[in-house]
Image (cartoon, one colour):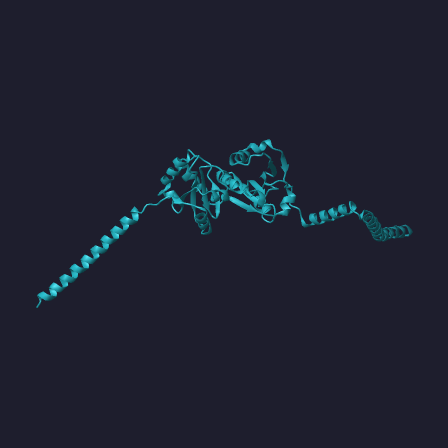
Amino acid sequence: MKVLPMLFFCAVFLFINLVSAQRNRDWEIYEEVDEELPKKVLQIDLHSWQKQFNENQKLLVLFYEKDNCARCETVVQSLEQLLGQPEIDGCDIGKSDDAALAKKIGVTEYPTLVYLRDKAHVFYDGNFDIEDVIQWRMMASKKVLKRLDDKSFEHLTQASTGATTGAWLVAFYTKSCSEILPTMETLGVRIQAKTNVAKVDASESYELVDRFKISSCPDIILFKAGKMYRYNLPKLDVTSLKNFADGFYKNFHAEKVTVPKSEFDYLTENIADFIKAQLEGENKLWMLCGICGLGVISFLIVLFFVKPAFSGDANKKNKKKTE
């Protein structure tokens, strides 16, 4: 009778060990399968790009052409070297030959590497050496192109004093020339250690447009040490703008940065503009009569207040003489 309980407990013990061993083996198999799951280069089209954009994902995409591009095949193959790199963790790697997507984001030559992050993209401007790509991706991990407007410009840049915030390269743009923005973003990655890079929507910042006499689109100005330098060369590529910001600006005319206008300045300016418009229009005669009448009234008011003062002084002098 005592043998049966012993056999029962042995059977239970063996069963538990067998189940545990099976679970461990299943877990090892799962881990092996998980490790063996290869990451792959994604094929990106307009739809998948938009999906990544909407979800605020990080995506590194190489744009290539199947034909008429000798370098494209080699560079596409080199993309696989980025897979599994620890510096690339959290970022999908893709390739695209979608012409509609390329046109949408401003790709004009092939191959071109584009990095999407924070719902903004930046173009890679180096050679396709893997180490350089990895380093550049780390530098470009956050947006560097700052947004300025009428309210924030002077506070952030201190442009009129050149006090504390350093040099600023600012692109004034509208919707018609917004293609400059990816170029400025790409430039910002390379010069962010020395120069702040920013954008101003000229269609929304009328005070800045008036203050700096913005007349072209885009209009790019370097603000440095209380001076401003207008970039007026036709080439708007990253290399030319980088050379300008790094020192070539010294060959351009330096203008003193004007201080922001006060509310009183705008009031007097508006009054002067109104009078000028009236004098140049059909109401010229009436405006002249009004100005003359206002002058006469002002003179009489001054005379009214000044005359008693003179009379008082004269009476005091007469009293002193009689005494």
